[in-house]
Length: 247
Image (cartoon, rainbow, N blue to C red; front, top):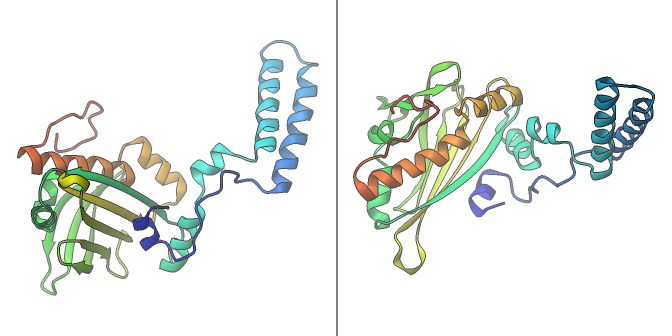
């Protein structure tokens, strides 16, 4: 877990172990796979081949203790801890980093300009300032536009900016961005971490990945777009899948 991930997950939270099956699940997989393998020898044609393949996969699943499907659709221990601490039904936790060839003060100032986020943040249509000082976001998800309110929860000079949705928001999310001087005078590092409650749970989160709307995918792309904007004054358009509504 990176330092910034640790700031979102409760202290002492462990990362997901390589094995994600319990002993009973592993044993059942080996038994089921062995039975299928034996039955496959009595079958001819495609049915026998398919049964043999499934049997082999189940045996491998039991021996390794790893279920790719469970890992894909399940929660890591750190995500479960974040969900519990935030009172969410589930959580997705992700982090990305980028190095920008510009002074930290300039990078922070440009990043802190919320009105300019739609220029480089693909899923952000607009950010307005409410009368009470909170932020009104209009963002995009697989179902369309979503409006929600957020606020700056922490800010330290030009080194830290944290944002979170307000209580009762339609899109529960918290984000933390750290700004550090890059080694050897190479500019500024932005380390971003985002935790959010996937609407609809793990299946919808997976669907968002397929449509390129998953916040983890967008965080990586948005930081690259922000880097391009700061360093060159423009954002290169490269969206072969047509997933960028601003391209």
